[in-house]
Length: 157
Image (tube, rainbow, N blue to C red; front, side, top):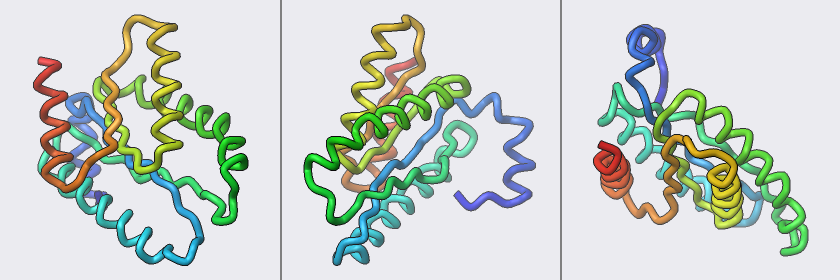
């Protein structure tokens, strides 16, 4: 969402009512098809922005987290980056779980999805009380994103 002074002024007294966060996590590589990749990412961001506007007062859309992926990286080099991906996922979840009851992490890269899944499993084994985490991976349109969030909220009631 494009925050203005007015929207922040409205949000500030009601921030305790916002119990959910949506974070889009994606990769960017400088390959020949970067234009298509960038346009696709912008479309996903537009869907997230629209869903946030529909759910104003309950859901906060964070700025997207973009991970650089070298275009000439081999499979082994990408595997070497996994500890870093896991560390970043762990830090993100630790920060978000302090402030939100429901965390929606929309991952559009298998490696990032794997990192968040592994970290979340470790956290479940280590603690008993955790906020709700939903990894959104197969979202095909704006309405599917909206429905998935509503489904999680309904189950939590």
